[in-house]
Length: 581
Ligand code: SF4
Image (cartoon, rainbow, N blue to C red; front, side):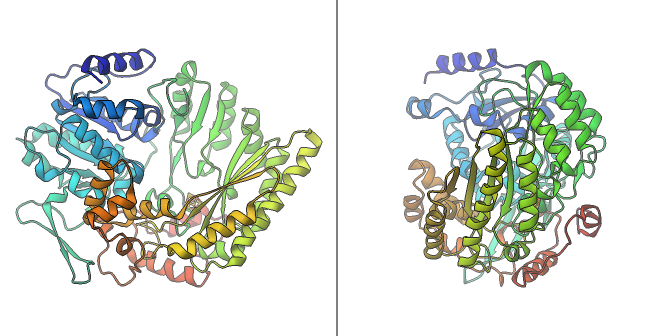
C-alpha cells in the first residue's frame, strides 16, 4: 500500500466517524495511540477509546490513533515498506514522541511487533535510540503480567488509564530529555521501566530476583495505579462513533468497575478491586449526548448489578430508546425487574457463566451459586421472554473428575427443558450456546501457582465433552482446543525469556508450534510447571494490591472445596477484602 493510499483510506474512515479529535502538534507531547489489531476490532474496545479521550483531554498532549492494517492490506504494506501512519493527520508513527499501545489480549502480542516493524521502529527496546518514539505498553494485560512484553517496551504502564495519565503529563512537562523522562516516571505509581532491572535466575530456571539497577531510582516493586474512587469521575464511554466496527455504532459505557465475588480463577475480579460505581447522573448525561449517534448501549461491567442505581439506569436508558446489551450478567444479580427491562429494550439473549455443572466444583473455584439457583435464574430468564441463553463453562479445573463433565451436560439438558417449557407457549424455540474453555491459570489469582492441566488429559476431556454434548436439539457447544489455550498460557504465564517465541511467531505469521521450536523457548516450563515453590513469580514485579498470603490461603481452601464467602453478601465481602490501600 502506497502512502497516498494510506492517506485516502484514513480520510475515508474519518469521514464516517463522529467525535475524533484534531489538534495542532506544535509544542505538545505527540502520542500515537496504537491498538494492536484492526480498526474494526479496536474501535469497539472501550479501554482504547477511553485512553484516547484521556490523552486528548490534556491540553499538552495530542493523541492520534493507529491500527494494524486489515489482513487484505497487511502483506502488501509489509512488502511496500511504506511507513505506518496515524489516522487523524496521516503522520508517520515514527515522527511521534510516544508510541503507546493499549493491549487487552495475549493474542495481540505479535501484532505489537508487527506494528512497530511497519512503523520502522526497532522492536526491541535495547535497539532503539533517541530518534525513535518512546514505546509505552499499557492495557489490561500489563497489570496481570507484563513480563513477556518487557523487552519490547521502553516503559510499561500498569493500571487504570485515569490514574496513569496525569503523572505522565507532569513528567513530560518537567523532563529535560528521554532518560530524565523515564527516571521521573519510575517514581510514579504504575510505571515500570524493564531496562532498569536485572533479572537474576536460579539454576532451575526460576526467578531469584528483580534487581533495580543502581542510579535508576526504580522501585523494588511497581505498585499498580488505580482510581481510589469513581464518585467524581466520568465513566469511560464511547466518544468516537463509527459504523465500521465490530459492534457497529454501539454506545459503550462502563457502569461499575470491579466485582467482589472472588472467584479463584478470575483475574478481572481480583485486579479491578475494589468495586467502584460511576455516578448515575453522568452515565445518563453521557448516554443522552450519545443517543443521536447510537441506538444501542453496551454496558461494559463485570458486575453490572453491583451499581446501586442499576434499575433506574436501565429504566432511563430504555426510555431514551436504547436497546441494551449487558456484557454478561452475574447469576446472583438476575431479578425479574432487570430482565424485563432488558427484554423491553429488545434483548433476546442473556449470557451467564455457571463455569461448571456441579456444586462441589463450584465450591472449589469459589463461585457462590448453586445448580438450583442457576435453574431458578434460567426460569426467570425464559419467563421474561428472553429466547436464547449463552453459557460459559471451563474444564481442567482443580479436582475435576468425569462426573463434573457429565454434570455440565446434565445441567445444560435441564436448562434446555426450561427453555422448551417457556417456548411452547410462544411457539418460538430459541437456542442455548455453551462455550467451553480449558482453564488457563492466570497471574494475580489464587491459581497463579497452578500448572495448566497436561495436554493428554485436557484433550481427553475435550473429546469427552464433544461426545457428551453432540446432537442435542437447540443446543450448540463451542469447545476450545487445548493447543490454543496452551500458547495463550505461555504468553500469560511467561517471563521476558519468552520474547524470542513472540518474535518468531510474528515472523512466521502465527505458527506458534514452529515459533516455540525455532526459538528454543521451553514452553512446558512456563505452562506445565507447579509454581507453588517459586519464591518470585514473573508478575511479582507489579503489586496489583492483593496479598500473596491471601492467594495462598484461597488456593488451600480451593483444594478443600471450601468457600471463602457466603453468597449474596457483597457489601460485607467488600469490607473483608485486602483491597488497594
Ligand atoms: S462473578 Fe464473574 S467477574 Fe466476579 S469474580 Fe466471579 S468470574 Fe469474576
